[in-house]
Length: 320
Ligand code: MN
Image (cartoon, rainbow, N blue to C red; front, side, top):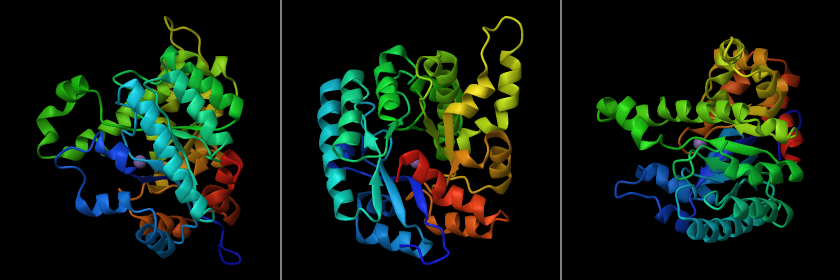
Protein backbone atom coordinates (compact mmCIF):
# COMPACT_ATOMS: atom_id res chain seq x y z
CA UNK A 1 0.00 0.00 0.00
CA UNK A 2 1.03 3.55 -0.63
CA UNK A 3 2.31 5.38 2.47
CA UNK A 4 0.17 8.17 3.92
CA UNK A 5 0.11 11.20 1.62
CA UNK A 6 1.61 9.44 -1.37
CA UNK A 7 -0.94 8.79 -4.09
CA UNK A 8 -1.48 5.23 -5.17
CA UNK A 9 0.39 4.54 -8.41
CA UNK A 10 -1.35 2.38 -11.02
CA UNK A 11 0.41 1.63 -14.33
CA UNK A 12 -1.73 0.43 -17.25
CA UNK A 13 0.49 -0.72 -20.09
CA UNK A 14 2.73 -3.25 -18.41
CA UNK A 15 3.46 -6.35 -20.39
CA UNK A 16 4.16 -10.01 -19.85
CA UNK A 17 4.47 -13.08 -22.06
CA UNK A 18 2.30 -16.13 -21.70
CA UNK A 19 4.54 -19.13 -22.54
CA UNK A 20 2.04 -20.71 -24.98
CA UNK A 21 1.12 -17.47 -26.77
CA UNK A 22 4.75 -16.32 -27.01
CA UNK A 23 5.68 -19.58 -28.73
CA UNK A 24 3.46 -18.61 -31.66
CA UNK A 25 5.35 -15.43 -32.58
CA UNK A 26 8.76 -15.58 -30.94
CA UNK A 27 11.29 -15.67 -33.79
CA UNK A 28 14.76 -17.24 -33.64
CA UNK A 29 16.29 -13.98 -32.34
CA UNK A 30 13.35 -13.17 -30.09
CA UNK A 31 13.63 -10.47 -27.50
CA UNK A 32 16.86 -9.36 -25.86
CA UNK A 33 17.49 -11.72 -22.92
CA UNK A 34 17.08 -9.01 -20.27
CA UNK A 35 13.72 -7.97 -21.74
CA UNK A 36 12.57 -11.55 -22.17
CA UNK A 37 13.47 -12.41 -18.58
CA UNK A 38 11.19 -9.62 -17.40
CA UNK A 39 8.34 -10.48 -19.77
CA UNK A 40 8.41 -14.02 -18.44
CA UNK A 41 8.49 -12.89 -14.81
CA UNK A 42 5.19 -12.49 -12.95
CA UNK A 43 6.68 -12.46 -9.48
CA UNK A 44 9.89 -11.51 -7.75
CA UNK A 45 11.76 -9.47 -10.38
CA UNK A 46 8.64 -7.63 -11.57
CA UNK A 47 7.59 -6.77 -8.01
CA UNK A 48 11.13 -5.69 -7.08
CA UNK A 49 11.25 -3.22 -9.98
CA UNK A 50 7.74 -1.98 -9.16
CA UNK A 51 8.81 -1.41 -5.55
CA UNK A 52 11.99 0.41 -6.57
CA UNK A 53 9.88 2.87 -8.55
CA UNK A 54 6.93 3.14 -6.15
CA UNK A 55 4.48 1.49 -8.53
CA UNK A 56 1.70 -0.09 -6.49
CA UNK A 57 -0.32 -1.85 -9.19
CA UNK A 58 0.42 -3.05 -12.71
CA UNK A 59 -2.53 -3.74 -15.00
CA UNK A 60 -0.97 -6.66 -16.84
CA UNK A 61 -1.33 -7.18 -20.57
CA UNK A 62 0.25 -9.53 -23.04
CA UNK A 63 3.02 -8.20 -25.29
CA UNK A 64 2.46 -7.59 -29.02
CA UNK A 65 1.23 -9.15 -31.23
CA UNK A 66 -0.53 -11.34 -28.65
CA UNK A 67 -3.20 -13.44 -30.43
CA UNK A 68 -3.88 -11.00 -33.29
CA UNK A 69 -1.99 -12.93 -35.97
CA UNK A 70 -3.17 -16.47 -35.37
CA UNK A 71 -5.75 -18.52 -37.20
CA UNK A 72 -9.16 -18.21 -35.56
CA UNK A 73 -9.37 -21.57 -33.71
CA UNK A 74 -5.82 -21.25 -32.35
CA UNK A 75 -6.44 -17.66 -31.26
CA UNK A 76 -9.65 -18.62 -29.44
CA UNK A 77 -8.02 -21.51 -27.58
CA UNK A 78 -4.77 -19.71 -26.68
CA UNK A 79 -6.43 -16.45 -25.60
CA UNK A 80 -8.75 -18.34 -23.29
CA UNK A 81 -5.93 -20.38 -21.74
CA UNK A 82 -3.66 -17.35 -21.40
CA UNK A 83 -6.44 -15.31 -19.74
CA UNK A 84 -7.09 -18.14 -17.30
CA UNK A 85 -3.39 -18.33 -16.43
CA UNK A 86 -3.23 -14.53 -16.00
CA UNK A 87 -6.28 -14.64 -13.72
CA UNK A 88 -4.41 -17.04 -11.40
CA UNK A 89 -1.42 -14.68 -11.21
CA UNK A 90 -3.72 -11.77 -10.35
CA UNK A 91 -5.66 -13.82 -7.80
CA UNK A 92 -2.40 -14.56 -5.99
CA UNK A 93 -1.51 -10.83 -5.74
CA UNK A 94 -4.71 -8.82 -6.13
CA UNK A 95 -3.04 -5.96 -4.24
CA UNK A 96 -0.36 -5.61 -6.95
CA UNK A 97 -1.84 -6.88 -10.20
CA UNK A 98 -4.93 -6.38 -12.34
CA UNK A 99 -5.45 -7.48 -15.94
CA UNK A 100 -6.41 -6.60 -19.48
CA UNK A 101 -7.68 -9.59 -21.46
CA UNK A 102 -6.09 -10.98 -24.59
CA UNK A 103 -8.81 -11.16 -27.25
CA UNK A 104 -8.93 -13.70 -30.11
CA UNK A 105 -9.79 -11.00 -32.68
CA UNK A 106 -9.32 -13.40 -35.64
CA UNK A 107 -12.75 -14.68 -34.51
CA UNK A 108 -14.59 -11.44 -33.60
CA UNK A 109 -17.69 -13.08 -32.10
CA UNK A 110 -15.55 -15.34 -29.93
CA UNK A 111 -13.48 -12.28 -28.98
CA UNK A 112 -16.63 -10.51 -27.79
CA UNK A 113 -17.60 -13.58 -25.76
CA UNK A 114 -14.10 -13.84 -24.31
CA UNK A 115 -14.23 -10.16 -23.34
CA UNK A 116 -17.44 -10.80 -21.44
CA UNK A 117 -16.06 -13.95 -19.78
CA UNK A 118 -12.86 -12.25 -18.62
CA UNK A 119 -14.74 -9.24 -17.22
CA UNK A 120 -17.63 -11.07 -15.55
CA UNK A 121 -15.86 -14.25 -14.42
CA UNK A 122 -12.19 -13.27 -14.08
CA UNK A 123 -12.56 -9.65 -12.95
CA UNK A 124 -10.40 -8.17 -15.72
CA UNK A 125 -10.54 -4.41 -16.33
CA UNK A 126 -10.81 -4.32 -20.12
CA UNK A 127 -8.84 -5.74 -23.02
CA UNK A 128 -5.82 -4.92 -25.13
CA UNK A 129 -5.63 -5.42 -28.89
CA UNK A 130 -2.32 -5.19 -30.75
CA UNK A 131 -2.11 -3.70 -34.22
CA UNK A 132 -3.74 -5.24 -37.24
CA UNK A 133 -5.60 -8.54 -36.99
CA UNK A 134 -4.08 -10.57 -39.80
CA UNK A 135 -3.70 -7.40 -41.87
CA UNK A 136 -7.11 -5.83 -41.05
CA UNK A 137 -7.60 -2.58 -39.12
CA UNK A 138 -9.67 -2.74 -35.94
CA UNK A 139 -12.37 -0.38 -37.25
CA UNK A 140 -13.51 -3.00 -39.80
CA UNK A 141 -17.19 -3.86 -39.33
CA UNK A 142 -16.36 -7.50 -38.63
CA UNK A 143 -14.92 -6.39 -35.25
CA UNK A 144 -17.93 -4.34 -34.16
CA UNK A 145 -19.36 -7.12 -31.98
CA UNK A 146 -16.30 -6.50 -29.76
CA UNK A 147 -17.12 -2.78 -29.48
CA UNK A 148 -20.76 -3.55 -28.79
CA UNK A 149 -19.77 -5.88 -25.94
CA UNK A 150 -17.19 -3.45 -24.53
CA UNK A 151 -19.88 -0.76 -24.34
CA UNK A 152 -22.37 -3.15 -22.74
CA UNK A 153 -19.79 -4.21 -20.13
CA UNK A 154 -18.62 -0.58 -19.69
CA UNK A 155 -14.93 -1.48 -20.06
CA UNK A 156 -12.27 0.22 -22.19
CA UNK A 157 -10.38 -1.34 -25.10
CA UNK A 158 -6.66 -0.53 -25.16
CA UNK A 159 -5.48 -0.18 -28.76
CA UNK A 160 -1.77 -1.04 -28.66
CA UNK A 161 0.85 -0.97 -31.43
CA UNK A 162 2.29 -3.91 -33.28
CA UNK A 163 4.69 -4.07 -36.22
CA UNK A 164 3.41 -2.28 -39.34
CA UNK A 165 2.00 -4.14 -42.34
CA UNK A 166 4.78 -5.68 -44.44
CA UNK A 167 3.80 -3.58 -47.49
CA UNK A 168 4.28 -0.46 -45.34
CA UNK A 169 7.63 -1.72 -44.09
CA UNK A 170 8.76 -2.26 -47.69
CA UNK A 171 7.54 1.08 -49.00
CA UNK A 172 8.44 3.31 -46.05
CA UNK A 173 11.18 1.91 -43.83
CA UNK A 174 13.14 -0.96 -45.40
CA UNK A 175 16.28 1.01 -46.28
CA UNK A 176 16.74 2.24 -42.70
CA UNK A 177 15.86 -0.94 -40.80
CA UNK A 178 19.38 -2.36 -40.65
CA UNK A 179 20.95 0.67 -38.98
CA UNK A 180 17.86 1.77 -37.06
CA UNK A 181 15.59 -1.20 -36.32
CA UNK A 182 13.56 0.94 -33.90
CA UNK A 183 12.24 2.92 -36.89
CA UNK A 184 9.85 0.00 -37.38
CA UNK A 185 8.59 -0.02 -33.84
CA UNK A 186 8.71 2.43 -30.93
CA UNK A 187 10.68 5.15 -32.74
CA UNK A 188 8.05 5.66 -35.45
CA UNK A 189 6.40 2.65 -37.14
CA UNK A 190 4.29 1.75 -34.08
CA UNK A 191 3.16 5.36 -33.74
CA UNK A 192 1.97 5.71 -37.32
CA UNK A 193 0.23 2.34 -37.20
CA UNK A 194 -1.61 3.05 -33.97
CA UNK A 195 -2.46 6.68 -34.73
CA UNK A 196 -4.00 5.37 -37.97
CA UNK A 197 -6.06 2.89 -35.93
CA UNK A 198 -7.31 5.77 -33.79
CA UNK A 199 -8.19 7.99 -36.77
CA UNK A 200 -9.91 5.14 -38.61
CA UNK A 201 -11.99 4.28 -35.53
CA UNK A 202 -13.42 7.81 -35.50
CA UNK A 203 -14.02 7.87 -39.28
CA UNK A 204 -15.74 4.46 -39.14
CA UNK A 205 -18.71 5.79 -37.20
CA UNK A 206 -18.24 3.18 -34.45
CA UNK A 207 -18.74 5.91 -31.83
CA UNK A 208 -22.10 6.84 -33.35
CA UNK A 209 -23.13 3.20 -33.10
CA UNK A 210 -21.71 2.81 -29.57
CA UNK A 211 -21.83 6.26 -27.95
CA UNK A 212 -20.42 5.05 -24.62
CA UNK A 213 -17.43 3.18 -26.10
CA UNK A 214 -14.09 4.00 -24.48
CA UNK A 215 -10.71 3.54 -26.18
CA UNK A 216 -7.28 3.87 -24.56
CA UNK A 217 -4.17 4.78 -26.55
CA UNK A 218 -0.68 4.57 -25.08
CA UNK A 219 2.44 6.65 -25.72
CA UNK A 220 0.67 9.95 -24.93
CA UNK A 221 -1.97 9.31 -27.55
CA UNK A 222 0.36 8.23 -30.37
CA UNK A 223 0.85 11.84 -31.50
CA UNK A 224 -2.86 12.50 -31.99
CA UNK A 225 -3.36 15.14 -29.28
CA UNK A 226 -0.68 17.24 -31.04
CA UNK A 227 -2.43 16.80 -34.38
CA UNK A 228 -6.12 17.00 -33.41
CA UNK A 229 -6.66 20.57 -34.53
CA UNK A 230 -5.13 19.96 -37.96
CA UNK A 231 -6.93 16.67 -38.57
CA UNK A 232 -10.21 18.26 -37.56
CA UNK A 233 -9.62 21.34 -39.69
CA UNK A 234 -8.64 19.33 -42.78
CA UNK A 235 -11.62 17.02 -42.43
CA UNK A 236 -13.94 20.04 -42.34
CA UNK A 237 -12.82 21.18 -45.82
CA UNK A 238 -15.20 20.71 -48.76
CA UNK A 239 -15.41 17.21 -50.19
CA UNK A 240 -15.31 15.44 -46.81
CA UNK A 241 -18.30 13.89 -45.15
CA UNK A 242 -19.24 15.89 -42.04
CA UNK A 243 -17.61 14.53 -38.90
CA UNK A 244 -16.91 16.11 -35.52
CA UNK A 245 -13.48 14.51 -35.35
CA UNK A 246 -11.92 16.47 -32.53
CA UNK A 247 -15.06 16.28 -30.44
CA UNK A 248 -15.43 12.51 -30.95
CA UNK A 249 -11.78 11.86 -30.20
CA UNK A 250 -11.92 13.93 -27.02
CA UNK A 251 -15.09 12.21 -25.86
CA UNK A 252 -14.09 8.58 -26.48
CA UNK A 253 -10.33 8.37 -26.05
CA UNK A 254 -8.14 8.13 -22.98
CA UNK A 255 -4.35 8.20 -23.26
CA UNK A 256 -1.50 6.90 -21.15
CA UNK A 257 2.04 8.14 -20.60
CA UNK A 258 3.56 4.77 -21.55
CA UNK A 259 7.04 5.16 -23.02
CA UNK A 260 6.64 8.91 -23.45
CA UNK A 261 7.75 10.81 -20.35
CA UNK A 262 7.74 14.16 -22.11
CA UNK A 263 6.49 17.22 -20.24
CA UNK A 264 5.79 19.23 -23.45
CA UNK A 265 3.78 16.26 -24.80
CA UNK A 266 1.90 16.00 -21.50
CA UNK A 267 1.09 19.73 -21.50
CA UNK A 268 -0.22 19.54 -25.05
CA UNK A 269 -2.37 16.53 -24.11
CA UNK A 270 -3.70 18.26 -20.99
CA UNK A 271 -4.66 21.30 -23.06
CA UNK A 272 -6.34 19.23 -25.76
CA UNK A 273 -8.03 16.43 -23.75
CA UNK A 274 -7.99 17.59 -20.13
CA UNK A 275 -6.19 15.97 -17.21
CA UNK A 276 -9.05 13.53 -16.57
CA UNK A 277 -8.17 11.65 -19.77
CA UNK A 278 -4.49 11.03 -19.00
CA UNK A 279 -3.31 7.95 -17.10
CA UNK A 280 0.15 7.03 -15.90
CA UNK A 281 1.85 4.03 -17.53
CA UNK A 282 5.40 2.86 -18.16
CA UNK A 283 5.40 0.18 -20.92
CA UNK A 284 7.55 -2.10 -18.76
CA UNK A 285 9.82 -3.91 -19.49
CA UNK A 286 10.53 -2.09 -22.77
CA UNK A 287 10.79 1.10 -20.73
CA UNK A 288 12.04 1.18 -17.15
CA UNK A 289 9.84 2.07 -14.20
CA UNK A 290 12.06 4.51 -12.26
CA UNK A 291 12.33 7.19 -14.99
CA UNK A 292 8.54 7.18 -15.20
CA UNK A 293 7.77 7.75 -11.54
CA UNK A 294 10.75 10.12 -11.18
CA UNK A 295 9.37 12.23 -14.04
CA UNK A 296 5.97 12.37 -12.38
CA UNK A 297 7.38 13.25 -8.96
CA UNK A 298 9.46 16.13 -10.36
CA UNK A 299 6.66 17.48 -12.55
CA UNK A 300 5.46 20.98 -11.64
CA UNK A 301 1.80 20.05 -11.44
CA UNK A 302 -0.80 20.40 -8.71
CA UNK A 303 -1.01 17.47 -6.31
CA UNK A 304 -4.64 16.99 -7.30
CA UNK A 305 -3.87 16.65 -11.01
CA UNK A 306 -0.87 14.43 -10.29
CA UNK A 307 -3.05 12.10 -8.24
CA UNK A 308 -5.54 11.92 -11.10
CA UNK A 309 -2.81 10.88 -13.55
CA UNK A 310 -1.11 8.44 -11.17
CA UNK A 311 -4.26 6.55 -10.19
CA UNK A 312 -7.42 8.61 -9.80
CA UNK A 313 -8.37 8.41 -13.47
CA UNK A 314 -7.53 4.70 -13.60
CA UNK A 315 -9.68 4.00 -10.53
CA UNK A 316 -12.61 5.64 -12.27
CA UNK A 317 -12.08 4.24 -15.80
CA UNK A 318 -11.20 0.71 -14.69
CA UNK A 319 -13.43 0.68 -11.58
CA UNK A 320 -10.55 -0.21 -9.29
MN1 MN B 1 3.47 -1.49 -24.87
